[in-house]
Image 1: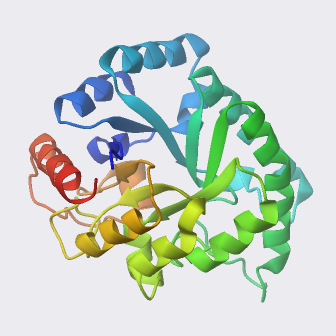
Image 2: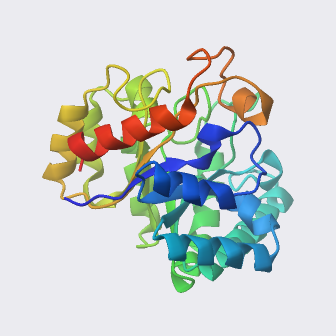
Length: 288
């Protein structure tokens, strides 16, 4: 199957808010079909800049997708209605921005906030889950009307608490029951939470709209011990045709290094481009 192979721009930088334009050329040169950008950062840029990104990507033949983790001030699962409603309005702004870019997928913590810890004093996440569902029931139809899909990312317990397993994600998207709300699974997070990575992929089935790739320690695919052959078999079994987007983080530093808990250089003095190019070839050979 000709699944698009992509990479998240944050692999090369330490801050979320950077100029995205150069990474379009880089992604193409290194053999990627797709570049994933930060949806919330893009929404805060002006329209003229967004159009430059769109035009450049179209010219170079590079697909675009969008990832993000909402900040706590926009928590769509907040028990504070003012916070939740602020989050809904911000998400609508993001959706409109991506729609201007031609539409597509926004994946990540589009249902709560990130990074997050379970609030002190609470004994059940059900009240926050209900708030999240309330938000998504408004956002999913809005996204669909704008040619945008929202993919709820299943994230490990150390970074989020609301949806940690594919089973929880399935229950959530079935509750929403809208084709604009689907699931993003991530090999790194599945390695922590799932009994079986290919089993989780098969369980997600038709609801799996995007897949993030990474080794167990966030190195690039092909540098570790993930069961890539079994993952491909599972993707084939569900006729998955969505993007394969690697999301590696190798160096410490900055807002990004802190957010993803990289406290040491995973690889000393890495040649980032050379490693990415080799991994893109690995993914094309082993997962498409």
